[in-house]
Length: 135
Image (cartoon, rainbow, N blue to C red):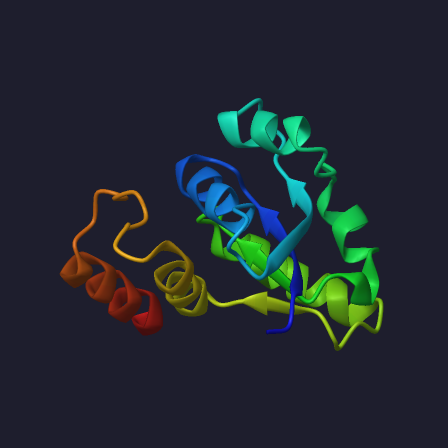
């Protein structure tokens, strides 16, 4: 199986859980860099495992060394900004994983474990999507 080089943006509860699974020995992903401005358990985990903690611009600067960027900040503007920055530097190789793809990847690497609950039901998430689309 092909190994994929990834970066993770946002190491709060969800990002930390994702990082932990992505760094496990049975995962076919290599975490090349993370971005987290706050002092979180996920940032400490990355630092302890010698995963570079970088700013967004530095991760974008890694170019084709990153296959996929997982944005786990929960802020839609971050993914949009990442896509724009990748286009500005001419990087059409690196992808920013959509939230649904991130959840799919989680399902594949985590088995029966679930991402931490964000306090919203699936119905609430769908309602938010519909309301967002109505704007």
